[in-house]
Length: 263
Ligand code: C2E
Ligand code: CA
Ligand code: CA
Image (cartoon, rainbow, N blue to C red; front, side):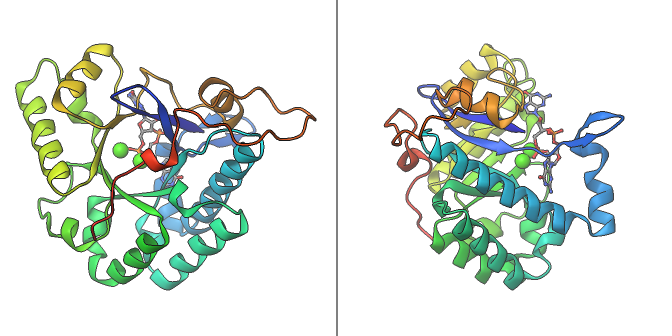
């Protein structure tokens, strides 16, 4: 499923987060909280994670061939996938190359603890990924480690603030101050900030005031399938036999996804 990532300033949809679902023959759609941990413990997360990346890249390609404007797709990465950094770099590179996707359209979401635990082993690999154009986002920011040293040592593009800070942002001054501080730090380091779990226009209003760059949440949409995503957010009608249109120029611009890389 894909959930739109929207720019705060003008509400343009500039990206999507790929969120895994298991289509179970009897139980229907099963959410990741029910199976990701088992997949991590058993090692299945490696082939699953590779499939998610491949499917996301293949989907980007399909949208492109149908004339949709280019957006960025974010994919969640588990610790286990980084155990062999060379192999990880190799399959990320192979996947976007085989799908003929611009690496700048791919963002890898990694949690603070994952980045910190593997910082030494992965710094070189992440730098090489960064040089290729692939973006790195810190997921669930503010809930993990207090050490921030990894931020200056790794080629990070953006920070996603955890949903728990957004929930009460208009009523809880502490939450608002935490978000304000995260945004100030991130902007000082030339990183973008994405707020997760935005459900109300008042929360969005508070984020606008605080200078947040992008947001994601039920206010815009729940995660939806690729077909509906294209219809609702990429101005694209369902697949037909008509030949692909040339890529449309629209308010969704690849260049707008992210700032200048400084590391
Ligand atoms: P996450 O990366 O923090 O993803 C955000 C979660 O918040 C998603 O839950 C999303 O559906 C939910 N969400 C989005 N907007 C709102 C909102 O406005 N309100 C509320 N209450 N929730 C919102 P989901 O899809 O159940 O995913 C849960 C977690 O499973 C993800 O958390 C991520 O850690 C993991 N996950 C999902 N897909 C993958 C994957 O492909 N690979 C790996 N390794 N982990 C994945
Ligand atoms: Ca995520
Ligand atoms: Ca998150």
